[in-house]
Length: 301
Image (cartoon, rainbow, N blue to C red; front, side):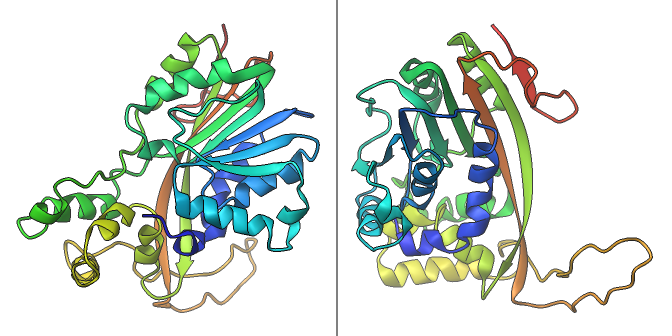
């Protein structure tokens, strides 16, 4: 179902939540690091680069993604020099580490997993003493791209072909994750981040979505039907994708004049929401917590 090349488009924008979450992980020398839902492995390689002394494993259920990740290891780039990095194909619901993990990371994967709150609640038990769990889930289920997909798949034309397709399930409520993790005896730092991406290219929002949310639909349809479906998604009007042309320019100090570029059709705005959770069995009371932002809190046992 997955297309690693399509997924890697807009890789910089997609990886921002991962790196901003990872920056808050305080592990110094973990012995074992796991990346659950590793995709094509680029971000797993970044984990190996940060902790070169650790055994690092990337886990993904997609054969296409794992083949791409393993090919990266033999391509002669920086990842090929990470001798303790490996990738395995497995369902993260059934995967278990062979030893306690110093760090477990899961970036933008849980929205594809049924009943994933139970999965999340099992992860703290896989951590070594003082270990860290960091995971992020998209929270943009109410955005136009998702509403369009739900409406189209339920429409008279497409429902007979797509009634059995499982769309991604998106995130639960932040309080539900907090309750599941606190119930497992964890200290939890949780916060919400909204990203306003400026995407370039032809139909950039559609191209973004073709790498993720549209994958089950495109995999279920014959090529001609898939083209017709995408044409309906593109259709202007109530069902058209958001993200019209935006002004693209950098902020400048007050009093300094700067010409702003004219509206450019090749640029489109796209809003994504990230729910972030940082869990540790170490004592981190007060780290990064604030009640000033929605869903940002520190729970302490």
